[in-house]
Amino acid sequence: MASATSSPTCTTNGHNADSPHEASQYFSYYCRADTDHCQGADDSIEKFLDGWRKATRSEWNTWDWGQLKHEYSHCSRSSDACQRPLQHYGAFRDEFMQSLFCCARQLQTPEDPECTSRTCQAYDMTCPGSKLLTSDMDCTVYHSRDPGTLIQNMSRMTVSKLGAYTTADLGVLFDVSLYGTWTWIPDEIFRRFDWPDSSKALFERAGEDSSAVWVFRRKCTPTARKAILDKVKQLIREGFHEVKTENVDKLSEALKTFVGNLADGKYGSGAYLRDWDHLYQDFRAVSSVQREGYLTYAATLEVVGRQQVGLPTTFAEDYQCMRQVSFLEQLAFIVQHIQTDVPDNISESSFAEEITKMLLKSGKYFDRLLEVGGPGYDEGFSRGKAGHHDTSVLWLVLGTVYGSTHLDDVLHGVCSDFSSSMGTSAWDDAEVRRRSCMDIAMWGNAVRHMDAFRRDTGDLIRPMVQALFTCLVHPNATQGITTVKAAMLHAIQVWSEAVPELEPEASVSNQLGLWLAVGAPVAALVLAIIRSARKRAGAERRLL
Image 1 (spheres, rainbow, N blue to C red):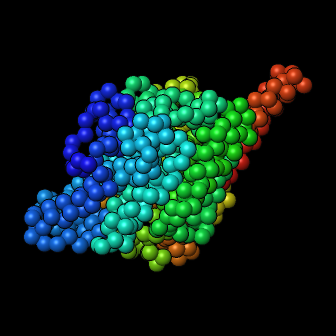
Image 2: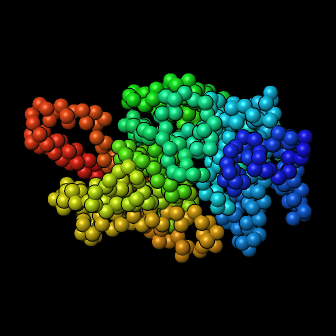
Image 3: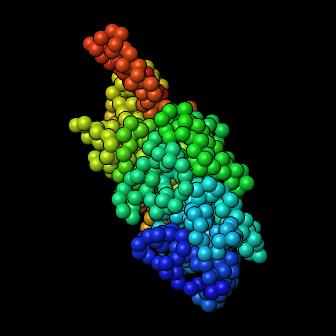
């Protein structure tokens, strides 16, 4: 076989894209029938180590992406010197992952070295997302029936090939996660799947030309929303238990069940809610055994993915549910970092010094609460004349927590402890806290650019620290009534409970029956009363 380092051409088996630029986003682009890619993975290791020796006259000894990020963030040398380890290791990560995928595909289909069968061509992988120096690598492994086995083999081969240097897995080595998400399938890959028509009818095409992807027609269900709300509450109640090493055997089985059901048409064509509930139940089973498994929630991937690439979609009746699930998922990640990165004994006096780690790690999740895009972000939902900020989940939640209903109760002494603790008026205090929360969301993405903060002596991050304290730390925490960390967790819990309720799934048929039974005027009045009661009930979940 030829050398694994030979340059691929546009005629590489496994993809049909019209140009190398478009094709190169697919890992199948790098797979050549005349190349031993398993040897190529070994060669990339030696190339990396030799290159480092020549550049630095020293041996490489850090096989931990997180450790390299930590060293970079605390580096006081020149930018070039500080960036060199991550740049060198990042280039190795890219080359090794390409060879690893192609090696695994070769081992999966030994009877088809030219990869001409639909079974072989259905294997692919993409790794979209941020390309910052410190970014992780979230990859989706595709196959029409069994993506899990490929993930399994890639994980095992990594341990085998790098065993002489480290026992770490892909997550520790490169901050790589291999997913089988199935909510964002590029058109280039979707066309290779030999699924029945009923399964393909579960999807709709979004975007045009090379950017087109296939997504579930039904992107969110009430049970999916309940599952993530329960997850947020569990994280607050029990803390975060990190899945440091994935059980790839369990992941493989969960994916085989889920994708196998699509291949066999067992989810129907989406005509009944029970089929979607079945589909999303299997979806969550995959998520539960994955590291950072939120990416297998269709709603979150839809929102976050389109926020990254600016691709619109037809959210239609799923609009509210999708945004709420995405909002709650971001809260789950924020809670995770509060639990793991904020000391239990953090105080008002130590807050500025001890909160920085949590703020840097969770900034992107606060940023995603903003629902960047506004008007025109969605093709299938009309928001009327109101400004887009008036309907965002964050805006509604903050309005419920710090809005007029809450403030009226404060001013009438319902929250006497809170009222007596304030030096300013209740209205001013709540408005300051609400604006501080918006400030954190708007500044959240800035903290991802670590090269600026690496040299920060406090001037850059100080306003964000102050805003975070004002937003999440209740005055009771400064008086010894509760701890600062407990106050932060309680604030997030109140946010999660202030997310407006979804309309019942059967609301359309129920409304029609009510119209027929009592007539339109009476039915309209009854429904208005019901909506008003729900709104009042939501407003009662306030920050006390």
